[in-house]
Length: 320
Ligand code: SF4
Ligand code: SF4
Image 1 (cartoon, helix red, strand yellow):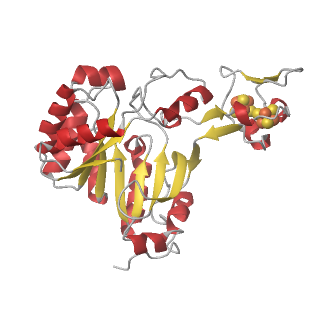
Image 2: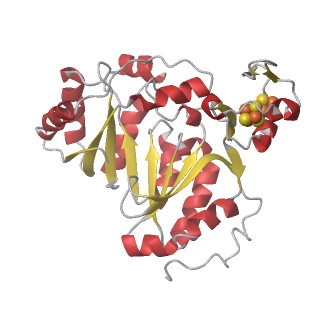
Image 3: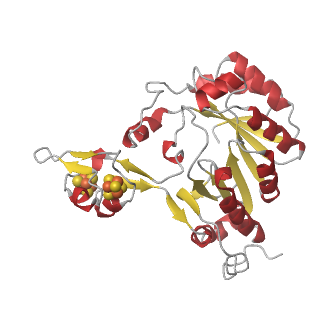
């Protein structure tokens, strides 16, 4: 097989109509989402509502308007551009008020805001648009042992588009990684898994009642899917966000260590420190942030947690 063949191959000429997907970012030169230099493709929409989510703009499946009042210069162009009467400029103070109940997320105001005080998060992409972005970095993947990571949001929630992209990547010999919460049916995962070289699998809480309270969903599917992937000997890296007071207690760490140490194909566990930087994003999206004021765990605390998990025979990294 020829590796990294060019996109002269018409995308899906034989597979029309092509699925489309809603993404909120395509990030190049990523080095934190799997081996080597990667392109990370961010799917919009997630069935979980983790209280600590640091990408709140990823949660809704619909495009959303984000406001950055600090950049606004009060020019009033957005008020003129809005076809739904959702924006008002205060005549004296030049303060901008956006009525989110009226906003239809059409994006007209963002096109006239040269100060980048407003941005529409999420847009529909065709396969070809995403592939062109991926393809432009083939040389970096080859030189670094990198590839493409599908992340979000939850890529499994837009499975037809994910499958089509995975097939394109595999047909051209690219390494693929899937960052997932694992909250989906096994039949869905079973269809996707032959096209995935590495799973980046999130694990949050072992107790189902606490999982429901802090993420909005049960962890039963998440745990059983992880066990099933491991039985099938897929390469898996588990990622645990460490949220002080929510999942860093001795009981949850013990249960996590016991569970993970039973998985036969686990490459490693990465623990990721909570950081409060998302608070401003919630404000800019017009949402409340229920963990306001929560501090990040110290470097010493992260080392302690890593040592606790290593005692179960796991390979544990901090960050990653
Ligand atoms: S167009 Fe942008 S800079 Fe001008 S008033 Fe609107 S938000 Fe502010
Ligand atoms: S996104 Fe559209 S509806 Fe919403 S404020 Fe901007 S112009 Fe108005």
